[in-house]
Image (cartoon, rainbow over all chains, first blue to last red; front, top):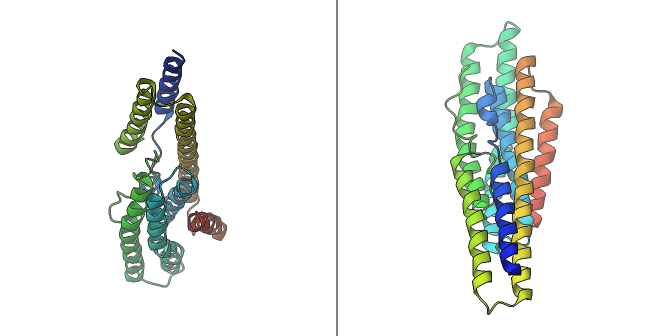
Length: 153
Length: 98
């Protein structure tokens, strides 16, 4: 009989957990400029990485899942870390135009490079979040953030 | 919450209930074993729920930060990058050490 009360208590607990979740925002969709799209994707990745770190540190996470998270993080980190220099190229090209120098072509080239980075990073970030999701870890912070179209100047 | 996440959460709940049902109907499991198993599952759910909540809050903060940056225009301040880089390095180190 005591077990029945345990079951009822846990059902209630589980339903509360399921009901409390709300839709996470999509920073990549919120960003209005190529520069902020770059930061949005990088920031979303960092949040996913922090979430993944918690999962990897959990004693209940299977060793193979931890290994997959580590491998995915090693693969995505060097690419993610290119966000800042690539965004700064866009900012410089835009500033040069504003200052009366530079050219639209240079800005277009910089934005294309940022687009290419977003495409490459989004794939690797998805691999990372997939590795985390294998631990049945609930919300996947970047899962709604990688569906980006081309960035335009 | 997107559909995949809803599915993951629901699956997690179902797994918990299935495990508990097995505990209830299987007299071979002693109370100590059953209790330990339930405690472990609850601990895992609580940990994941807390992490999910923190991630959601962090996404909201990032969203607000982006809105502010777009309103202000101009280059993204260096301290913004430095903050995200520091968080990235910390998370990377935690994963490597896990």
